[in-house]
Length: 450
Image (cartoon, rainbow, N blue to C red; front, side, top):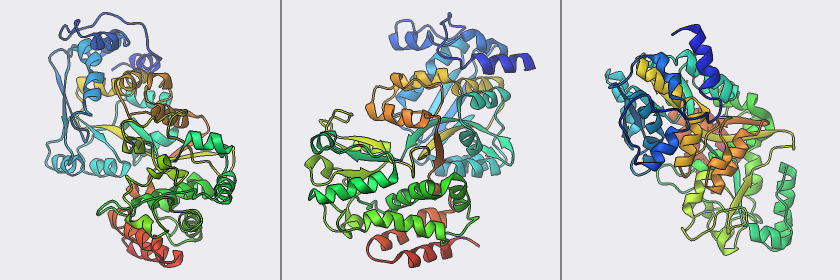
């Protein structure tokens, strides 16, 4: 591929939803209005530089299964029509186990949609993953922040463009209650504390929470602590904590858990409509925010995906029955965002695979995918939030795309399994049922592999 094409493709392919041109190949799906609309938003000429791709196949493997996979398949159709390439998508709920097995066995897909940086690193370590082409690297430089690119960079080599994202730094609330009671959305942690105290003075329980999740019981507390690590000590210290460059029982981690305790272990604050502090451990996380609709609690800290737990008749919107606001930073100038996301990792470097990777790294694809989806957003700077039909998706996109936002992945997901998905969950559960903070962080530190 010529240097001229690399710069032209990176500069043009993602430059907004460009004027449509005729399809370059593939089947005639002109009777499918959705296909035609999607096709009209990409410039097929940009893919001619990859050569004649008609009749080629690219396999994609992911954790998203039917019916949620339809939006992915639909978003691939414009590329298929332009190039004549067939995209074969396979979803598997056991993806995280199976992708490692397949990679180690020498039978990986062409592209995997990988949901965690830690798993991406494991896959790179198999020696089967391939570096992303220059076109993808250039598009990521243009459309994402450096923090996102760093998560898909291993030993100085860049492997995959980000795909979807989710926001965990949210607080769910009742817009009507806030309006009727004269409550303002807080802009700082101090204002959040003052709001909680005002609700107590108004004879309310400000917070409801639940951490029961089968074998994963305890994980919502890890999200709380991660959010407070980011807010109290900043992204650099957070990164050191996740990598164990500072101890889990150090002063920062201890203070962050105590800051969470100021909310979750405060009997005046919790657990509205559900019980006392200890009831948090036995309340299913799916049920924990529902008392907001009953008026027995006022706020619930949980990710953007929590919207799915409200009944279908519930209006989730800024003027609806329930909505969410950004969990504020320490001050109004910083905007730390805790969340998760996916990456497109390739195991082949054939021209058709490179072309498809490039398509997935553009703002063009992000906007097509956004129009086709519910419950999906991206941190791609070219994403137009107006292409998202779901109010929570729009809120998440606005938070992710804020120039002041500093994004960090869920820390427990990146810690060794003995810690992040074992000791951390178990000790957090013991903590909420009465164990002191020092014992809790000491026990988690002891679990860290030597």
